[in-house]
Amino acid sequence: MAALKMPGMSPQARAFIERLKGEAITVPSADNILQYRLETRASYVPTVKRAIEKYDLEVEDININGTPCLQVGSSNWSAHDGLCILYCYGGGMIEGSPYEDLIITTGLAHHLSARVVSVDYRLAPEHPYPAAQQDVGSVYPALLDRYGASRLALAGESSGGNLALALMVQLRDQKIELPCCAALFSPWVDLSSQGDSHQFNDDRDPTLNTAWVNAAARLYAPNQALEDPAISPL
Image 1: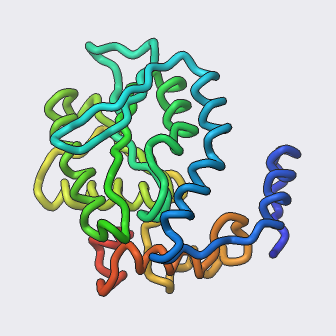
Image 2: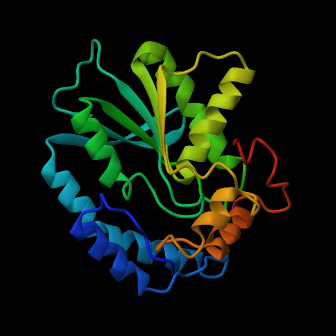
C-alpha cells in the first residue's frame, strides 16, 4: 500500500491507519452480505456508544411517509427556527444504518445545534436501485413542508453522498425547492469503474479498494448502466 503523506494528520490517526493496513478487506457478495453487515455493525458499537455518551442528545426512531428514520436532536435545538438536516448514511448501498452513522450525526446535531433525520433506507441486493433513492425521496417533501427550505439542509457520507446528490438532481428536474445547503462527505458519486477517484485511491484507502467498490456497485444496480446519471450523479 502506498505511503500516505498527510503532514497535518495526528499521531493517533496515523496509528489508526497503520493498523487498518494490516487488515484484509472483505469483498462483499450476495453470499456473504448478511454476515458482513453483522460484523461491520459489531465493530461500530463501541464507537457509537462513545459518541452518544459524549453529547447531550435525544435519539429516537420515527417514521415519515412510511419510511423509518432515526432522529437525533440537540438540547439547544429550537422548534421555531432550528436547522433540520436530512442525512443519508454510508455503506455502499449494501450495508450500514443510521445507527452506525451516529458517529457522524451526533456531532452534526451537537455542533450545529440541529435536528438530524437519518433515513433508514432499504439496502441492496435485497432492494436494488432505485429503492434507496425512493426512500430518501419520500422523506424530503415531508421535511420541506414542516421546516421550509430555509431551515432544511441535506448531508450524506460515502454512498449517502450519492443519494443526497441524486435527490438534488431529482428535485431540480421536478422543480421542487432545493434545501438551503448540502454537505457531502467523501461522496461516492461515480459508480463506474472508470472514475478518477477509483484509480487514484486504489491501494491508498485502508478500508476500501476497487474490487470492493465494483462489487457494491453491481449489487446495488445489477443490469444497469452505471454511467446513468441517476446512478452516478456526478
